[in-house]
Image 1 (cartoon, rainbow, N blue to C red):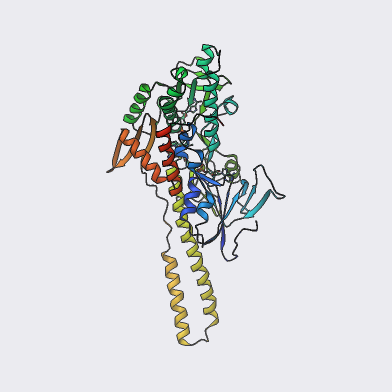
Image 2 (spheres, rainbow, N blue to C red):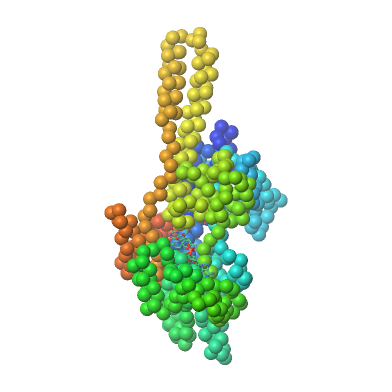
Length: 475
Ligand code: FAD
Ligand code: NAD
């Protein structure tokens, strides 16, 4: 599509949509000599989501947890085309993708369509609001980098506004009431981080206000963190109690207003709670692009949770489309762990497919030659026959292995230098919580960060906060 695209007509074109966990893991493992590879994503970087809540309270610098996609592709043997654009349409029949430049600055071309032989669809998911009134307008999300930056700004704005001279007591209490909606891991980790910020920094920066800051976590289900074991749920709840974070279970947010949330309490009564900030961490749903793509294959794609794939990550009902990560509906949880394993798996499968294509191509050549060399010498005919038989037998042995997920365990930070971990251990589960687990959490995340550059940046940020505290200035 552009002057930079390296194109070899003998190779198939592989288009990758997204630059998140699935796509980045795929790109890291992919042998780019096999295909003409094009990556399309509206973000020209990878975001390390597990550390996003740390950005929201200023522990980490936003730039420390992102990595430009070109940082990976530039080390590849064969050049990859990286395009910062949003895919707006996938045509699974004609095998094309249409995409547009949705950034502020545009050239004279800002939308185009390209063809693919294979498409890796890894566009993730978007925030689920359940169409609850006021969520989009008044709540902060915790999904993208910009969400964390916005939350940090708004949180500090609430604190600074509460510090404005003459603010009446009721208004100060409203401004300093932070409500986190959703008791999944995102809501829990964010509440924990908010509490740390309060304890470690705000108490000394805003001594007159800190004691009045309240954090409330609202969860519709009877308990938080349903994916963790009962023991760790109890541990989290008691840690939150000690940290004075209120957990309201069996309570559903019905509306978000500019200065309050409307809650449906366990006894079904409706209560309006004044607050300064609402963070919406109530789960995800499929993107419109995904819904539109699925609607084009109505007989095979009926799952409301996302794209249905077979054991090889192939989208059911489509030819040449693979789907990975949060946009799929599988038996696995929508996690980074799953998406990255699927990405790496798919890179290996695509390599195997390229090798198979090569063999098939060579076999066709040999068969054509064989038909023409009946007059060749006996030695030539034998050589040809041997090679043909060798390739045919290698082709017969090619067997694509289905995707197999290997669960490495669940980890979550719960604040106060404590983390919880459910780790698979000797056919059972090992549950652990506390400060040691927190150190394990830190080292696990540090080692999972893709590059030495990011590891250095994150470690330096942690050290800076230890020495100087978090930065409370508001951009
Ligand atoms: P994403 O990583 O979301 O990537 C999707 C990509 O597609 C993005 O690059 C996006 O820009 C791009 N895209 C979007 N629209 C388009 C379009 N129209 N065209 C082209 N590209 C598009 N999981 C864990 O396992 N452990 C954790 O500790 C953990 N912590 C988390 C903390 C937070 C705050 C959040 C929000 C999530 C966390 N997760 C965690 C979940 C994890 O981030 C997701 O499961 C994971 O990101 C899914 O990977 P993905 O590649 O499917 O999607
Ligand atoms: P989630 O879907 O796991 O949790 C959202 C919660 O919000 C649910 O418990 C739901 O009952 C609640 N909720 C929804 N609507 C509500 C309402 N109106 N009022 C009150 N509560 C409401 O979402 P998440 O926490 O963002 O996690 C998404 C995925 O990312 C999960 O698969 C999770 O495992 C993964 N993740 C993992 C980690 C980790 O391993 N540390 C961290 C973050 C996210």
